[in-house]
Image (cartoon, rainbow, N blue to C red; front, side, top):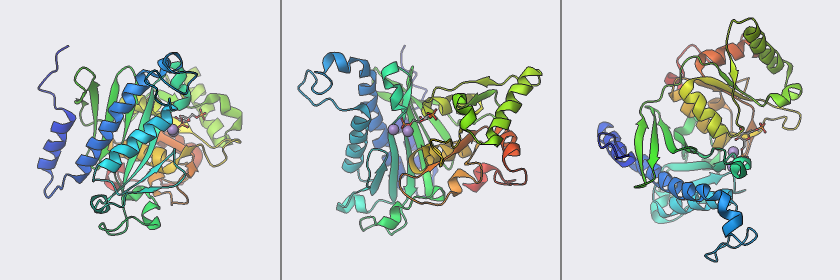
Length: 350
Ligand code: AHG
Ligand code: MN
Ligand code: MN
């Protein structure tokens, strides 16, 4: 298939955005380009995942004599490397790193941005050829640029986010990111290594028929979640609705599908994970930001995800996220009087 040149590449889209925003510095745009570069490298290795045991020597040395790394460590190293070489990131938080990385060179110090990343999400699915992904959130630092970041800058809060996105390594590879203006999706053309704008201005449908949850944990969920699930099944039985369950257990795959088609995703607290399983700064906040910009909503059952106060870098939270109408239905089972979804549109809050 030839490349349709009436479709913008990621770089062309970035330039068109810079042109349309008065006083844009291009710093955020450059940061997104750096992340997209890491994504292309990760994509290449993810595609070879099944060959590791064949080409590698018992999983430690490959035929080039290089150390064979676990893919999530490889993805982490790629992300850290591009952000270190670039000049648009002052520091990183990663699922794979217990501590933060501060870039204290003269140029990186001048950056306004901190990146939080889950380099490879859904990694338990790697061996099964199921779609996996990379998730990132871009936060404004709190101290003045020009000096290395401090501990204060890494007290990441959803309300300080300026952008978020994900890469899905699936039947095709897509790079999707949100700014406060819009959510746009780009599909990789592997023959020339370019991302093309395939999904402009993504809007999450207000209602959908998909619900995504690990229903095997039913008896480990709180009663209100059980009641909500019972309600869904009852409505289906009475032919009042046609909910359909779709759950891959790779949140990038589940949420990408729900974002486009409409749906709701639930990862509630369980006995095993009483505070929830998913991480706030590099899984839930980025997804909440993306869904809110696209017209959806995200909560932990008690408050909006983007309002959760910072406790620690790797803190966990329950996550309920999806189409606005479906989130309202869920909310009616949680706390009837609660106004967490607000009367304002989610977009207006960002
Ligand atoms: P990770 O591979 O980064 O640890 O994350 C896996 C996550 C997420 O992708 C998925 O939705 C969730 O774990 C599955 O959770 P359950 O085991 O509760 O189904
Ligand atoms: Mn993850
Ligand atoms: Mn991960």
